[in-house]
Image 1 (cartoon, rainbow, N blue to C red):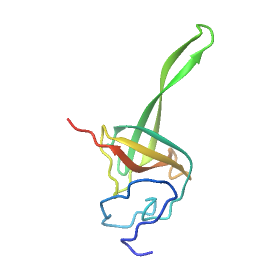
Image 2 (image 1 turned 120 degrees about the vertical axis):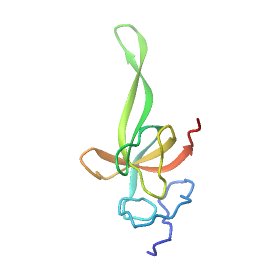
Image 3 (image 1 turned 180 degrees about the horizontal axis):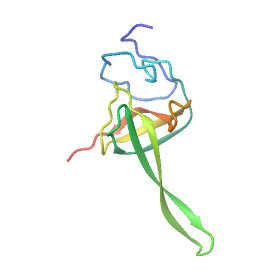
Length: 117
């Protein structure tokens, strides 16, 4: 595979505009990682780690005792490839993949909406 060639990952997404400076083996478009399983959309809460972002999305949980719903949130760590480079506040789509590290099982596949101040 050529360095600038973009691989089809099997999911309809916008192709990354940036070409990475170096080949990242954990990049779904330029590397060797395959995406499979579930796909989520959430907001990047933290992008302070190297090549990793924390993505969060709300969910509703039913409380049987009170017969009402309560709001909870799910937070996961996802690999942030250099070709996508999501920042804090961006709304992103993440896809499940094989374990990339102890806590990372997801990879960012596209930025749905950029954060603007």
